Length: 200
Image 1 (cartoon, one colour):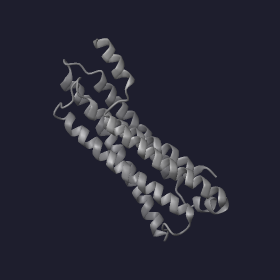
Image 2 (cartoon, rainbow, N blue to C red):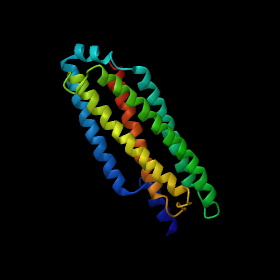
Image 3 (cartoon, helix red, strand yellow):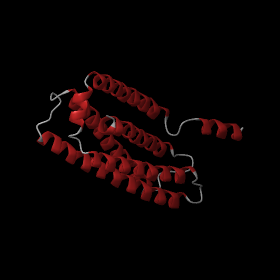
């Protein structure tokens, strides 16, 4: 009986069912934005390519590395949680806390770099009404920026719980749910960065 329960548990996605509903809705929303961007670009490729030159590809690339690295840190924390036993709860929470701390630092770094990019863009007098490229750029990146901010807060709350050894072998759903959300944020940027910053 216990073996069947373990198999069923392994077949289910990590975390709570509710977080996956949120993730699917978010992916659908961004997907519609991506499709709208692609069609608008196709209708005015020259304007999109010219406007794209005003973006800082270097900061975008650095932020890509930051988020990919942060997802690695979060994955390390999840692995520790999933291999935790009743004998090493305190030690596992402590190790996971360290990995999540590294991920939080990455999240803050991303927000700082992206915030500086927004300051530069707005300083150039660019707004949502400048043209369709910048309308999509600002909508997509600012929407994603808010997701990174929320994800960072979620990771901070996870870290706070690890500080009190709040996760046990029978209760890691909250950790896995937060990690799943963070991986979604990373995945969205991996699509967003080449689509908006690079593809011409």
